[in-house]
Length: 507
Image (cartoon, rainbow, N blue to C red):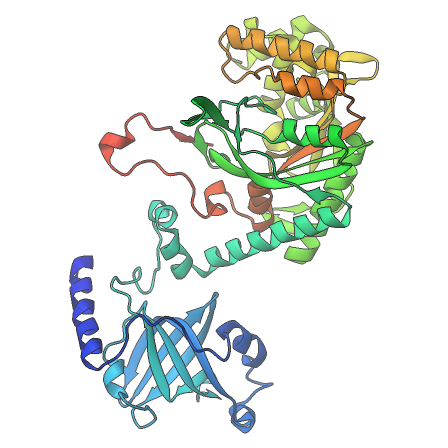
C-alpha cells in the first residue's frame, strides 16, 4: 500500500476507537516504571528466572511505541520501545479487562500504548509484561519504515531524523552519547575552575575567525547584524573585565559549503584563561580528551574506521615545517627558503601560488602533505603570522606565531593561541586584514574598534582555544560524517528548482 492508503486504514481504526469510547490521544500516561529501568534490573534470565519474578508480585505500568506485533492464536506478542530499550507485552484474551480483545485489533506498529500487569518471563526467556490492561496514548496515522530493514536511505534519514531515531538503534545511541560527551566536557571545565558564560549570537561586526558570515537585518534599529562566526572577541572582553577563566559551548555560523566535516551551523567550545599560554592550553586539551574518553566511552583507545586512536596523554607535538618535511618526505632545509617554498607549492599545483606569501604557502603545503596523515592526536605548532591575525608571535621570530592546531583522525579538532594582548600590534593586524578584504578576500576580518579599545584598557597574558564539539563526537563515536552527529543537519532543498545552485558536498 501507499502511505496514504495506510493512513486511510488507520483513520478507520481511529473511528472504531472512538466508537468504543476510548481516547486516542490522552493528556498523560500513568507509568510506574520506565522500560529502560526494568530491562537494566531484570533482563538477566539467570539472575531473574520466571519463578523469582513471579515471586516478587511486581505489577508494572509502562509506556512505549509498538515496534512489532505478532498474533499466535489467543495470544498476541508486541515489542514496546522507550529510550532505546525494548520490552515485550504478552496479551492473552482471557487476561484483558474491557474493552479487552477488541482493542488489540486496532493496534498498529508505531502506536504509543500503556500496558499494565505483572512482570514475567516467557518460555523463551524473554522479559515481558503479562498485560491485564492496555490504553492508547497516541494513534500513529502513518507507518514506520519497512519492518525488517529500517530506514536505510541516508538522505531520508537526515531529513526525517525522527524516523531515523526510531528505526536505527545505533543512531539513537550516538546522540545519547553526544549528550553525555557535552555534559562530561562541561563538568571537566567547571572542575578546572572555568565559568560558563553566554555571548551574543548576533553581532554588529563578525570577528574572531576568517570566514564568510550570514547576514540578517534588525528592523527596529535599521541595522545589519551577523550571525557569529566565533565568540572570541566577546570572551576576551570578559577577560579584560576581570574574569579569570571562562568558557562557552554554543553555536557558530559560517556561510560555507557542506561536506562530511562541515555544516554551516555547528557547535564549538571556546575557553580563555588569564595568565596562561599555549602550553597550558595543550595540557588542558589532552587531559580533557583523555578524561572524556574514559568517562563516556570507557577507554582511551577507541576505533576510528579501520584504525585505533589513543587519547592517552601526552599527545605528539610537531612544528608545521617538521610535519610538512616528515609527511612529504622533503628536505627540511627547503622550507627555510622562500623561493624553494614557492617551487614546492607550484609542484603540487597550489592555486595562485605566485601571488601568495611564503607563510601562506606553508599552510597550503601542510594541508597537501600532512593534514590527512595525522591520525593519532598531534599538536601542530609554529604557524606563519599570515594565518593567525589574533596570536602572539614566537619569541625571537616574528614571522611565526605561538599557535597550535590539534589534529586527530586526519582533521582539525582544536585551535589555540597565546593571545595577542598588544593593542597597537592588534590594530595593525586588523588593518592588514582590511587591506586583504579590499583586495577581494571576503573572509578577511573586519576592524572591531571597540575590541581594540578594550585591549587598550589592559588585557593580561591569556591562553585561548576553540574545540569543535561536533568533530569531537565524530571521533569518539567513530562517525565518519558530521551529519551523523548533528540531529538536524542543513540539507539541500528537495525540489529541483530550489536545488539549483545549492552548495556541493565535498570531502
